[in-house]
Image 1 (cartoon, rainbow, N blue to C red):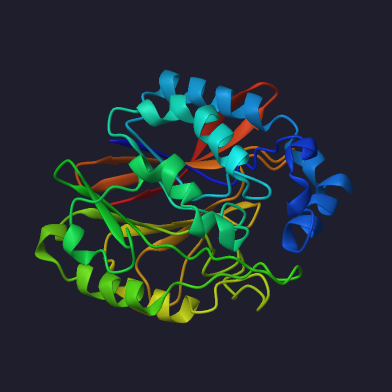
Image 2 (cartoon, helix red, strand yellow; image 1 turned 120 degrees about the vertical axis):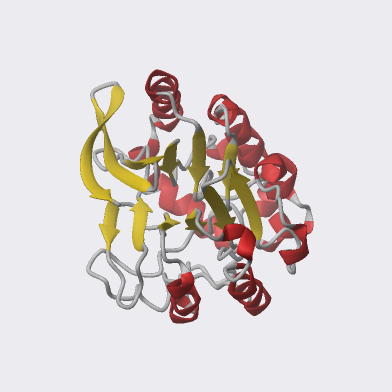
Length: 295
């Protein structure tokens, strides 16, 4: 089974699509950041995702996982456009699984109007609905006989402009704790995915205003993952880091589209072993090189 994990494409519609009534609060600050130059790092995001789809087809990817941040401002038009852009990636033989990023739930109206769910709900289905205690969360996909993907949501609106922190609701953590004891997961390679990075590349927690508030609680529960990987995005650098007290390492996919920082992770799982490769963008296409083999 070959699995592609990417994150944070940050597709950016023209600011002319931002309705006047949205030019207040958090979105106004975000729009000003784009005008100040942040957006130029993602100018070719759509073209790069098309190249990533070519990579998917050429390399025989079976399953695609994305840890969110499709948009810049979480506008309904952005989410609709993003869903259309990544549609080719969603036809992998074993499907496409995603979680939202903080930019996708940029403001409360996204939740109120179900904008992310309307556009990406088909990529958030579950095979074990009895564990869904917070809307669709956490959800689980059983892939074949030897893989499972578990997703929790750490993204939330941050009305205060200078905050971009995350939090996993307690009811989701309680359900995750019970879920990891479910005998139907025994013997499977487990991917546990959420948007926020529970640790930085150096193994330290992220800052209070940018990181995952209850990362320690999340990691404490993930000690039950004896064979698997923790997947995230949010930090726009592709890295792998071991975690104190955990068997599973953390894999941050960075951003698949940020200029000069493009990356992703490729997992080849077969006969109980996992070969992990890091991807990169070279001129106009994606490639990868082997980083680690685990048995």
